[in-house]
Amino acid sequence: MIEEVLQRLNVQELLTEFVASFLAFLPALVAAIIIIIVAYVISRAVRAVLRRALKRANFEEVLVGLLVDTVLHYFIVILGLLMALSQLGVNVTAALAGVGVAGIAIGFAAQDSVANVISGILIFWDKPFEVGDWIETEGKYGKVTNITLRTTRIRTPDNSYIVVPNKRIIDEVLENFSKHGEVRIDTVVGIAYKEDMEKARDVLLQAAKDVDGVLDSPQPDVVVDELAGSSVNLKVRVWVKTADQRMAVFFRMTEAAKAALDKAEIEIPFPHLQLFLDTVEDRVWEGARTVVTTESKQ
Image 1 (cartoon, rainbow, N blue to C red):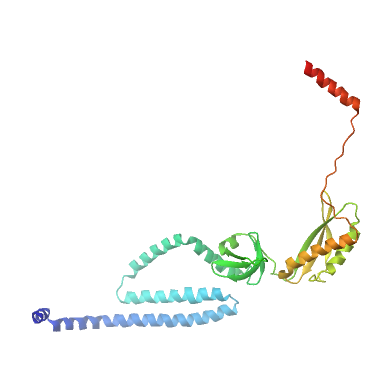
Image 2: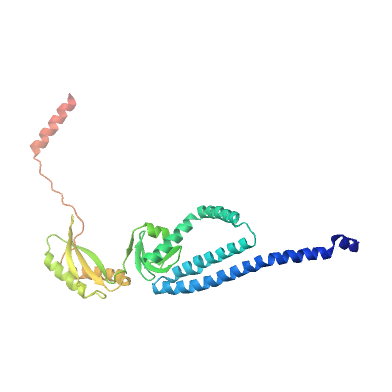
């Protein structure tokens, strides 16, 4: 039975047709393979040149990796694959249309993630802050420990770990305390209105000079910040070398200011109110009461 099947199939004729078809297809296959190899070689060469150029321009390693090893590499490889498929007779136009529709659907589904990645690229490009900077954003203050394409990680002074999406950082006001080196610290202290402001200023300046971490240049100074309801508020302005000293020096300065004013017997008043009462004569009060009583009877 097998012999009858083989005779009907005419194996020799089938082999001849297969070899002929393969030989006809072989040039296109070889061309496709060559295109893929050339695309890979071009990708490696271009990536090496572009990586060196971006590093000389002080681009961040994460951004270099994204642009060179991901975007550029896959763009060249995919372009080579499409050219290879075209050589093999595949309808590339229809395939691209399908990929485009799928890309739009994925884009809508992942628009928040895409927005965070774009914001991450802007952070690496514009460099409003870097790893190690002390920043405050959305009411959160701390040290930047890591920046990724999607999020920024911050360690707060109480050692908690905050992960902030990059889009929210780009959209909000950000304060960088490490961008320009020295940081000024303001400590507000209130004294009573009866006290001598010049004496209080001298006392506070001397206290500031003795606080560990306060710089001699720029020099500390004391200015009148506000004439408040219960006190004259003086602002002690001192400078520290780096932002990581900011909170510690603020606490030390506050404590030193209180101790120095107490030692100089300069009053730090509690909030208070003054009430002024006018004395009303008895006859006036009696007359008013009589009028009220008369009106009630009517």
